[in-house]
Figure (spheres, one colour):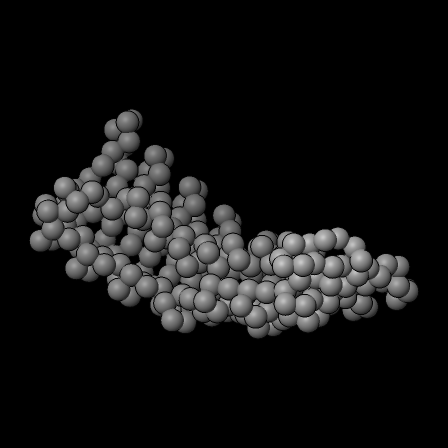
Amino acid sequence: MLMNKVFIIVMLILVSSGNGLTEEKKLVPEKKEVTKDGIFKTYFKSGKLESERYFKNGKLEGLFRTYYENGNIRDEVTFKDGKYNGVEKRFHSNGQIEFERILVNNQTSGTVLFYFEDGNLAKEIVNDKGGESGTIKSYFRGGGKHISFEGGFKGFRDDGICKWYYKSGKIESIAKFKNGLPEKIATHYYEDGRIKQIDKFDKGWLVNSKKYDESSRIVSNQDFSHKEGEVLGLR
């Protein structure tokens, strides 16, 4: 249960730190083009506009914008002297904003906001040190800003207390991380607050898992062994 959730956190961090920059690199013209000045455009095979950008003294300057073939804006980001500077936005194909952030000299600054296709907030990531550390808060679909997860990361790895929630607002799971690995104990709860499962970790490895039924009776108590990074199974 917890390891699946860990995977989700890691994916969120990777997306927040590189989602825009990674794909925009594919859009930046090759070196043979960047010696030009003025506005340059590319087109889909259908003849519809695909992208437009402006060069000044061989460097990208001002608004760089790409489009879906249906004409809606896909991405837009501002350049200054060839570097990402300003607000970056990405949109769903239906025209609703997908995410937005501020870039300063190619680095993320402040908060990154992600949105569902219906326009409701999906997650917000507050970045420090160019996006390498900060906090993540995710929300359930359907509006209302019901939190589904909140936690921190450092060096692009999970760090500190992480919490998962039911849509009712009750805590579903809570665990502590360090350098991307779970520490000591992770506790999972039924929605009424009673303990559902307790997992114990040693150096990031699961060593014991104890499960409870809704009457708080232990229904499973398993020990796990591992050696040099290889899980050997139940002990």
